[in-house]
Image 1 (cartoon, rainbow, N blue to C red):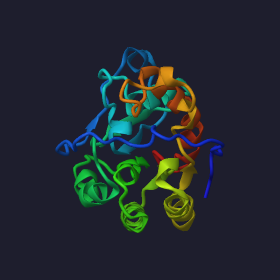
Image 2 (image 1 turned 120 degrees about the vertical axis):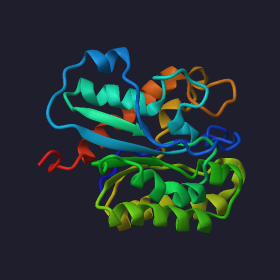
Image 3 (image 1 turned 30 degrees about the vertical axis):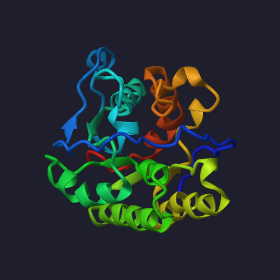
Length: 233
């Protein structure tokens, strides 16, 4: 298991996405932005599935400002011919994600080379039992294992107001499962937003466009490093 970053602070409110869940759309490729459209295609295409909740879906942002689109641009700037497929649904819990994962994967025209997942924020925000989150996340990672798809796990931390007992049961879920499944772990990928209110929308939950850029900058190394060596072979 590869681990990128070590969280040193906790964030009380910036920990999930509590808006109503939207119907799951058919996964589509991320629309090209001016940055990605102008970059040359280099090497075999790397198909990356972004699977999660509103933190990946770009809640409150303009088209092209969400995490998948900006991650695609950052990878292409490194010479990687990345194509991000946005399969995020605002409001999803880990259980909802587990229920729709097979559909999302079956809808792909080709098997993704890599998946980047972020789920569990809504579980924590709603105070759902961590044991349920662990079970659902394990099912998600097992499905990716079954299909031979590498995964980057963008983990979440419990808000301090939920108490030590909840945190002691919730926080170990991601590192334990990433290790068990041999996946790449990014601990608390929202850490770049800590103590920077200008990077958070007025709802005090979701990142602004600049906040997304900071999150991408802190995770692009992990994603690039997790791309399988045999892509295009």
